[in-house]
Image (cartoon, rainbow, N blue to C red):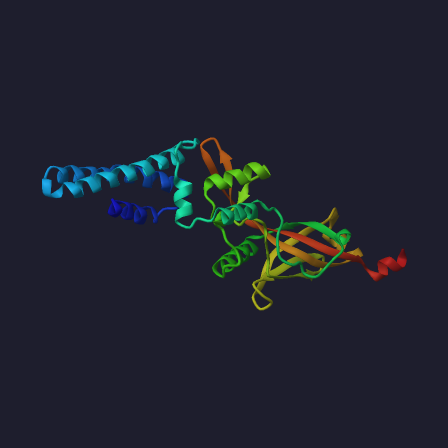
Length: 276
């Protein structure tokens, strides 16, 4: 049975298959392969010298059949199995329910952590609209890969299963991103070229690239905002990517391009304040 599951795992590894679909495949293979244990137990029960082995194999078959049945309920229905001892087994094996609950709460957060680029008064911050050109999108995707490789960003829903993700989605009433809360860009600044304003960012000041172009500042066009105000990047966070939403039969996985959410701090230019 273990050989069959290992072969299936290697085979499915060549395809981009979601966890629940893979779980269904494993459950079916385990169900069929488990009957080999029943076959072996029957063979051993036929001979007096091997009946003890037969009984052990039969007990193992029944135990595995129980857990396979639980998997069928979990992966193929939206119901919860009665007499499910999985939580007790998880606790016995060291599962930390408090840690899982903390991970679920962290996944439910919709605000970015980490410090902004300096401290600004809340009434001096403006949201922006940005556009991302293909070259900028590639730079942003590369940054996400670099952050993931360094462990500064995770894309696994905090390690939670689809059931926990569904609870988070129902609580927030919105899709649950794989990254959890938006992830701050480690280093960022603004670059002005005429009336154009670009967001430059990267892992650090030595590995920067253009990530987005600001198209509006608050309700103002960029040119008007640059004419009247000094602008600085207050916070730049990564959004988008993979997310999950509850469906009629489990969760539905969506994939969107990574994007940026940018807040700018502003102060009136001296020449403008002088005229006023």
